[in-house]
Image (cartoon, rainbow, N blue to C red; front, side, top):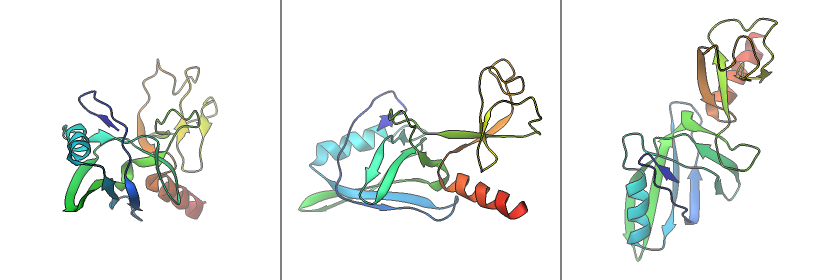
Length: 167
């Protein structure tokens, strides 16, 4: 977990429960038991910034690797002998982690205008693309207008379904 203030921390939740929303407007929840108040305080401190925190390389039994771009909040601390903590974040922020394994989120940019034949960027089923430096329409010198979403997340799946229906 990386906080907006620059701090980072690696945490383990015992008996984790991951609840994923079905829609972009929903909220994902991750709950689990932590060792002690120190761990809970560290999690809360990292998420206390104005944009929450970023979870990377998030794994839970039965779920593939996920990443969250930000706005993670500690929403519940419950003591019953041990301490149970719940993290929440908007569903639209979740995506898959990069294939490099470094834990960053895969992001797709959806162009606000037609891409044209001269576009050499990698395209995805959702209508998004991965801009490359040498693309005349989307390279770094062009500053293209793109609406970003987390690749492999709920937004990406909904855009893919919408594209399949319109085709």
